[in-house]
Image 1 (tube, rainbow, N blue to C red):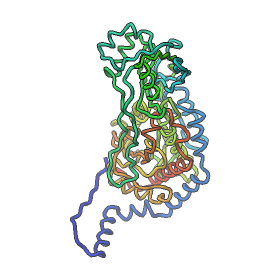
Image 2: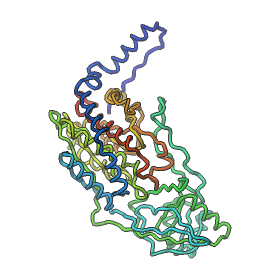
Image 3: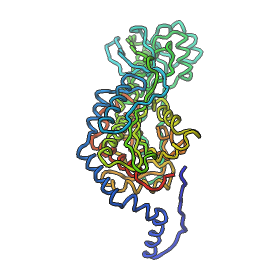
Image 4: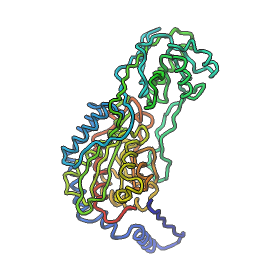
Length: 500
């Protein structure tokens, strides 16, 4: 890990000239003059940044890439045919732009899953189409299930166990109505100089008589035909994930828009004769149980054995195309690769990675790190990985990087990105961030940092939901993010000193 350098000084009462002199001395101590010249002031860096900006602003491909990924390919659940289509497409683009060794690298994952069709509707006392999505890897229903749903959200575990005869073949409303909703995004980290906690918001689950896993097992044993549950989203927003280890004989599970679920429960509580129709047609993919990472690189020159790694996760969940999680990050990485391919070759090799399986536990990045970098056998390769730059959580423009509590690296990144203030660079923050692919590298002591973005509508509306579509990002923000990544990668590929 990188050393943490802190400078503390006593409170002094000094005249203004003396204060200015003192500030200059502190600045020179904190950032040595040679480093400042190399990272912020030399002619080669200025010329490269100018070319990156010109290419990224005036000959951008971001909108073409973004539309193809979100509109044409769509959701990209790991190990699904759509994910493989996206991986092949990305590898072909890397080859088209002249990158070397564009390839797919497999890792063990398990079977894939695709939703082929869904019927979800209330047919009595009036017709009403319901908003909802099956959890990923849920099995199909046995055809269309039509009937009055059985509500068990107000029953104890003992009462539910005693209802086995009523549950067999039934559509089950498994939990109490949703009364807590996510209504605020987390604090925007680029808006304050204060240190703020960074992390995903907690899940607000509706109440049930027992843990959901135990309840689902009980319903499976009872022979329920389908299970419906609400979620924490508002205004038709559906937060829905899934478990790749779901057994074949599990009860098909569908997450409903909270307002629709709550309406049905209230009607049943008023003895209104409700009839629902539910059908899930899903397909497992078992011919190829690998996940795939996409890799390509721009070979270096005099420091070619050292590597700057730039990446984002290509996979998404299944209810939307994952525009902010993480098509925008993928496009930033791909466009950064295209931009850098138009420049002279870098000193260090710059390798680009699009990871699979991130949503199931950072699986693709971890497989890569284990295969190529971890352990004594890979010590030399690990030492030669100069830095990993990741683009994932948040949305919009890239304002800086999370520096994982590394003050020395933060001073370097400040110098690297300061020429981009007019494009929206604000600040690097010392805070760490979790739950994304750079952790596969920090855990083996490789310097690894994630982009700093905002969370406007991210937590309440788009992250892992059915609303994360093309409209969530703008061409301007995609261009800016690609330029920031390209500049950071170029600077890392040419810096003389180590970041460790």
